[in-house]
Amino acid sequence: MIDKRISKSDKLAALPHDRSRVLYFMIYPHLDVKGRYSGDPRDIKEDCCPRLSYSLKAIAESLVELHAVGLLVLYEVDSRPYVQYARFEDFQAGLHTDREAASKIPAYSGPTPEDSGGLRTTSALRLKIKGLRFKVKDLSIGQPKTPADPLFESEIEEKFKEFWTAYPREGRLAKKESRVKFGALVKRGELEEFIKGFHGYLNYLKHQKINKGFDQTPLYAKTFLGDRWREFVGFEFKSG
Image: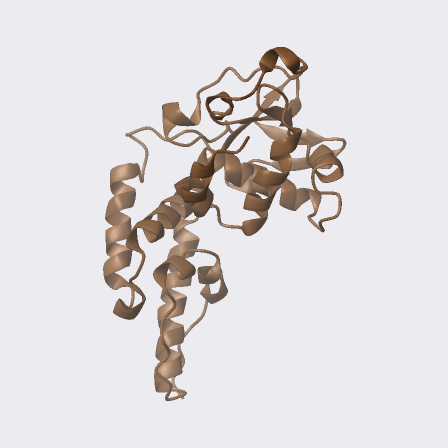
């Protein structure tokens, strides 16, 4: 059962790719009575989305994104990857557990998303899947942040305020949703690259106005904070 509150989920909205949202719902019917399933992208590809053209690497990246925002926990037991959906049992009021098969998947015993405000795996975790290796470093996961770490929540808020003030006024709409997306990209370790994309976008707007004589309407901030900022990384303004 999927609670209707999912429609207003900030965590779901913070995901950078629609692919990750699709996979979240396509895995759901395959969960066991405890909300667990294999974390092997090949199992997910074969069982949950066999007719979609998602690569194994794309599926692995989506698992990491879902883990990073706290919608599920990606973990290992005896070098085998599994997923545990967050708060699964809280939303299964009508589930008759006595009529369901017992879970055969080992339980996750680490911190929950509620404990840490969104999880990150340890740097030792690797998705070692039948000869495939998806390194955590490549998928932007690190150790859980503590108040002593750079860009803790209060610092993210300050960085967002700086961004919001600098963003073209016409595009400053949906501030709350924009803040969620900004926080998600920072926690994925993409702030430095995002800043390059933001500067590139400002250069692009300047290029449109000066070189082409066209006053380009800026993207809404929430749209820019999705994946659009990536398009402008490295864009340089050159007059004439």
